Image 1: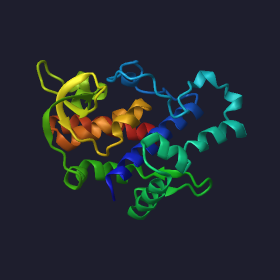
Image 2 (image 1 turned 180 degrees about the vertical axis):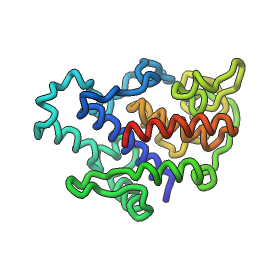
Image 3 (image 1 turned 135 degrees about the horizontal axis):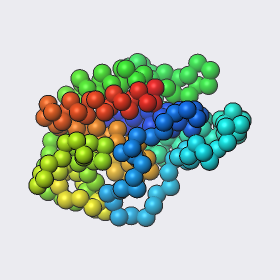
Image 4 (image 1 turned 60 degrees about the horizontal axis):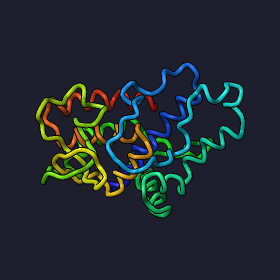
Length: 229
């Protein structure tokens, strides 16, 4: 396993959540902490992964059409996955094969679409990730807020005057202690996908947090994985 494999798995979780939300009119949709327009960078808007349209924008009778299904399926091509997370098509293919061998994902038996083993991924992130990919805070820098400083946890964990962890990024808005992202393309990938941003921030909180931060992050990670399952 490589660190980009975890980034890919979390992107697949995000796509699954969006697919489920868009195909199920009864779903509640994205959590409240993802509905704001908050962002921690100053660059121009980056196009989304193409699946962020709201349910109400797609009539129910169109959701079963081949065109709509093809639009969803296209998000899982190695090319689109590579573009979304900043790795090459060959790296995506190799990462998928490693995830299949490890039991962290498998191809859908009908469509061939890669599907994440939510339980296995959860177990690895919670119990193994900080040992396999340890993270340390370093010097003060400008960047994108992560872990307990990101919106997904900010209202539950942050305290006044705390120096926050950030992914170093020249266009980031937050000054804080640098933490190397799980993979170098993370700052670019999160600009395109708020759900992925939240998953990666939770992952960082589990990697570097104290017991309280880790427990809160685990609870929210469980919630998000259940939503995408």
